[in-house]
Image 1 (cartoon, rainbow, N blue to C red):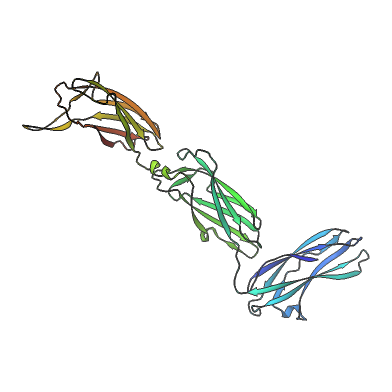
Image 2: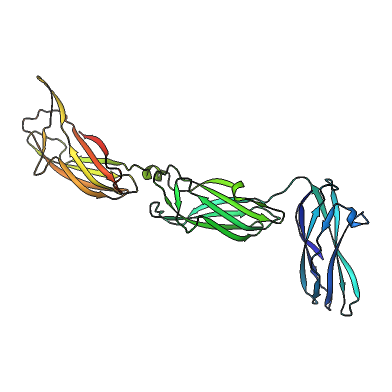
Length: 361
C-alpha cells in the first residue's frame, strides 16, 4: 500500500489522498476496508481531520492492484498550521473470512490557511491557415496548459469574445472539455473573421473549471490575447478602404510641346476588401498669367475624355491604366502638374463619397 497522490491540506477545506493497493500474495484478498489514524493521537476523532470512508473492495485477486481515493476535511476550529503524520490503513480478510492483517501507508500532511488553486495557462495561439483570410474566415488554435501538478481540471469551459475585432463563426463561442490532466497541454480551435471597424488583433478568453477542492468561474478568469496576424493587416482592414496611386510612369523622359505621351498609372487598393465604381479624373492646373490666374491644362487626352471608370479593384490588388495625352504645341518649357482625383465606393456601397487626390508632375 502506498500514497500515489495527495492534495494540499487547507484549513477549513477538503483535500484528497489517493492510495494504491497491490495484493502481492498468491491468494485473493476479500473485504478490503479503509481506516485512518494520526501519529501521536490515540483517537482519530480528536485530531483535526475527518474523512468519508470509501467503499469496501469486495475482492482483490492475487497480483491485483486497486486504487482508493479518500477525501479528508480539515477542521477550521481545531486545526493549526503544522505538519501531521497521517496513516492510511487497509484491513482485509482471507477466503475463510478471517482477518489477515492490517497494511499501512504513512504520509506527511502540512495544514495551512493558504489555498492552493490550480491555474490554466495560455501557452500560445497558432494560426492554422497558411494564408489567413480575415474577411471570409480563418482558424486559430489556443494552446492551454493545466499548470497544476496536483489537480486534474474537470468540466473545463472556454468562452471567446472577439473584443469588437472578430466574430466567432463556430456554432457557439463556447467550447467545453470534460477533463485536462495535471501538467497536460491541449488545443482549443475557433474559426473567426474580422468585424467592420476592427482596430487590433485583440480577443478575450474566459476560462472556468472545477477541481477536487473547488471551482473557478468563467467570469473570474478573463485574459486578453493577441492573434499573431501580420501587423499591417489591421491598417489595411479598417472600416474605410484606401485607394492610392502607387506609381506613375511617362513614355518619354523629356516631354516637348506638340508631343504625344503615354501616362501609365498603377492604382492600388490597400485594403483587403474590394472597392467598386472607381472614377479617375484628370484636373486642370492654376496658371499665373499677365492678366491674372487661370485654370487650364496643356495636356489633352487623345480619343477620350479626361475621366475614365473602373468597375472594381479587388482587395490588396494593383491595376494599371494607360492614357495618351497630346501636349499643347504652344506650351512653355516648364514643369507642369496634372491633378488626379480618384472617387470610389466600398464593397457594400455604404460609403459612396470616398476620394483621394494626387498630382502627376
